[in-house]
Length: 117
Figure (cartoon, rainbow, N blue to C red):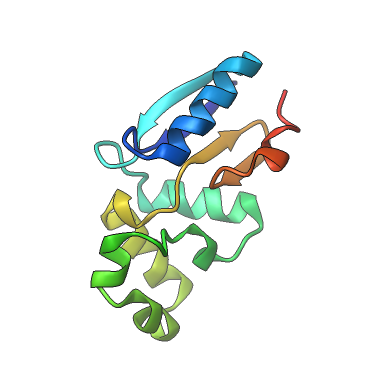
C-alpha cells in the first residue's frame, strides 16, 4: 500500500513535503484536506496509530483555530470531542499528514521524513 498524503495545496509546508516525496520517488495518494476531510473514524484510527496526543493534530497556527479560541476551549474537551471537532473542518487539522506503512507523520520535518522508503 502506498502512503496517503493529506494536505492543503496552497500551504507552503505541504508543497515542500510533496516536493520531498516526489524527489525521493515515494508513491502516495494525494488527498485535499478540505474537500476530503478525514472522517471521525479515520482520524481516530490515525491518531491511535500515531501514538501522539490528539492535541498534536490541531493546526494551532491557523486562523480558524485562533478565531474559535480553541487554545482555551480544548482544555475542557475530551479526546472524543476533539476528534469530532477535527473531523468537522479540515482547516483545523495540522498538515500535511502522511499515513501508511505503519507510519503517521504530522507536519513536515524533513529529518522525520528521511526514514521513509
